[in-house]
Image (cartoon, rainbow, N blue to C red; front, top):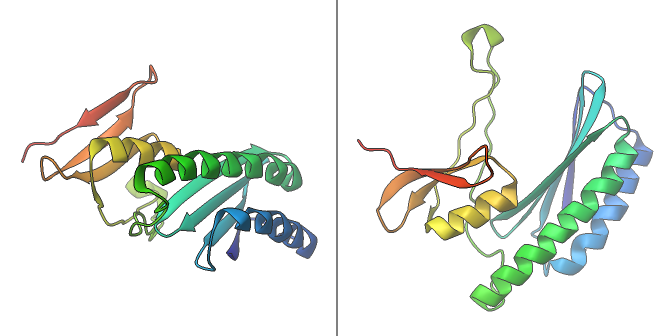
Length: 177
């Protein structure tokens, strides 16, 4: 597993990095090959410390985050979340695709550009739209833990936006051009 540690407004100690690598290597049992990529973000935001772990294996992304006042506690809390998601989706995809889980093209390639706050836009991302069915988009959005997901619908051959409503249900936006 390729582990990349990214620090924002914080300098992680070598001890913390070693612990993270040791704990993440235990997840290798779920993946058959060296092409697994893992990004661990340590971010200091005001008085809170945020740890985010993103695992990518053959185009599938699993993500979890934890916020507290201690990075060591965050790691101990975020890794069971990641492992649970891996088991859940690996089982689901294995059943559906007969052991071809996590074998699709990359969905999301972040290219972040930060702009001055006075323009109103503070972050910009670019990603390639992946053709899929609505059901697959629901699973992908759930796996990423996002509140919305943009995708190219295979049935209607159009771009759609899936979003989580305030009552917990899902909504689908189908724009007309």
